[in-house]
Length: 338
Ligand code: 5GP
Ligand code: MN
Image (cartoon, rainbow, N blue to C red; front, side, top):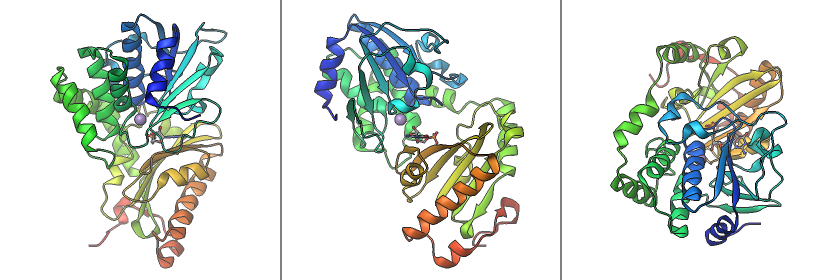
């Protein structure tokens, strides 16, 4: 059931022991919103614990209380009276769902989240779940401390590509401005988020070598196969390396996860990639979406290239001659409009 922000606040007030979680493959918004929620609820005197069923990337260690995030152990349980799921529907929280059978309060900003069979507050116009938590903090009358502000700012900044993407609205800047007034230093957060090890940069160049252009250059893909995946610590930002190519509308990254499990991450400049992801069992935002394919790497490669092409010809983003073009061109061989 879709509920209001006020109703979400009331559910939080009524609970005492709260488990807070977010999605696997956690990003700045997932971790920022969970850690901000943790602090707000503790301020209110609640017993709270954050669980995320994944590794937390090193860059996010700037966020206060990051060290408190637990990963569920086998056979572990958590005695909660409310499970708060942030920045995703509950289908992407891994093993956290097994920790408790408490009722779920879901807070999210993904258009693809429909909230079947649970209480959902969703605002697809919010740039980040952290922007919603910012409003929720006001609704709850909670003090936004410097530590909370750092978490919320990090989530808003990372989900907007540092205020670059089309989800950046006036309200996003208003929230960010208030957080900066509370003491957040944007340059410090940017520096921390963009930091990469030498190893990561080497992997980036290897990933770029795999880049191919499809459909006359309107689609670009990068391919982290099993071998390359062993060297990759983070795929964060990789897809952006090819999204910027001027001819490209849809950029995607295909990553080997395990035998017959591959991840697709898509970015676009106009094409509704959330619809493509949804067709393949995933979801996300209009211009940033993803899905998991339970197929071999080669088969996944074929599926995603075909799914993007079919969607784009259906919606008129490709001309028939571009769609019929089955050429795969490496970056080295692609000349664009030159
Ligand atoms: P990313 O490419 O950064 O992993 O994800 C882009 C956006 O799509 C994020 O907002 C993310 O939460 C969403 N997303 C990625 N993969 C999936 C998926 O498998 N299912 C759903 N529902 N959303 C996804
Ligand atoms: Mn988000």
